[in-house]
Image (tube, rainbow over all chains, first blue to last red; front, side, top):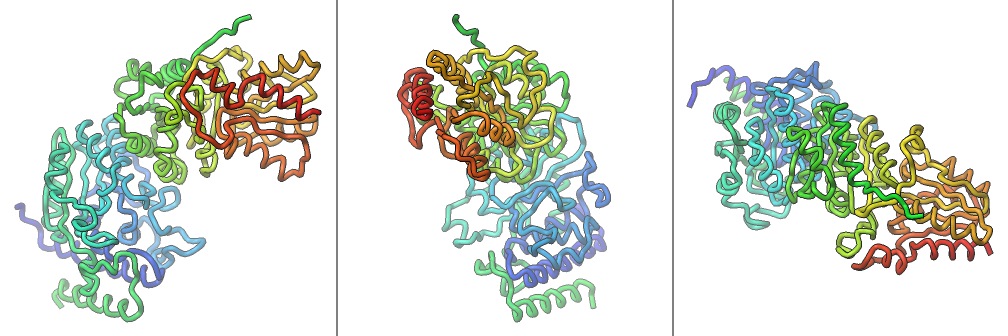
Length: 284
Length: 314
């Protein structure tokens, strides 16, 4: 385990809290959306954008940028909040999520939203799309890396396994998957809905380098991303052990918050909890 | 006089090789059918820019979109049945909704696939692609036109679909005949003022045969080659409705959702009351057999079209 600058870790954890607050506010305001899977994905996406990836909010089309593709498109409030906080667009846009005549669509849309690489929302496509981006990078001898986040429930989709074969066949070492392993999908526990275990063996048998970490530990996320980037001849899947609804006690591991926004009371409670967490991190 | 034949699939493969030189960003993907779709010609010439995706069409389509997002002109090929229906959601999200620069070039469209039977006879692809926003839809009629349309597909940005049949097809055009070909502009292949037969793909040649049969009865048929089904040449359809007494559409496709539907929509919205019939597959699955026999049994032969014209003009 590498040692990390404590200040950096603290900074990233604080950004993660801020993003979680945005997510809760956005969904409360939009009166729809997916809190559970958005919250479980926060720490990895924050680490990618605020510490790991080469990217520039002022040049979202830079051909040399690292790419992030959110295959589990319903977690997009987290990505929108990260992009806005990083400067891709005005933070004010977040308040207009899912509203008519506004930019931020219910699921990622790549033509009009700066920083969104792929239109997703129909599950199972993102890994294939990321393969295409990674193949183009190899063809053009570019140095960029491609990161793609998958939901664990999403890997029920057959296309994921077509893409898993292709990524390994084409030795896409410039591709890293992040599997948000929160064990919940709409109809219940992933193992009851359609068994996924052993997830590690599945990916490694498809020829992937597999790293398993705590998906809410920023130190581990930083290390895993570096390890993945250095890989030769094969793609890497980072299995993020996560908690659906992470950061808000009554949403954690609660499948009822898969696709239901908080009501007024829940909204206030959630923000209060996140404020407390923020003060704790700040050492106040 | 026997017709000079050329396979549109070969025309596709050869044109890809030519375009590969002109466009360094052109890439080609195939799903284990490169010998049939003829993308193998490109694969041999430009192995680095050819991606064999195996029997995994959904992955092929989304990967083509990922490549396009990095500035590539992606051509993805397989049989029409696998290139559309099987991957409709991937095309909808990753190509049409995303307005990606992906060109789907499908072979083995229609019933002329023959003996492989209904599982492989794609008669709904034009309908499926036509309904997608941003998508341009072509059905070239011969090898010469296929070459020109593939060139047009590469030259212009955006989602496009083209389908040709499996079989050798009679040559209708010489290269110079098509120097002015444009997306969305139909061709008056042969003129006449009694009836207009608006056809696409393989049916253009059948329409020309029909025209010959009708001329024996003193009926002068106009044959329109509607190579672009979307955006369709509305002006030409209305011109024909005005200038000829009757109109037929002919397509190797279901009469629902394809060329016949597109033309009907134009006529209905303009309040045209011309005599009109849609020739195509009448909302049914067909069967194994020789293409010629299938065309006869399912009402696409020149004899059948000529008979329908005569009934219509009565």
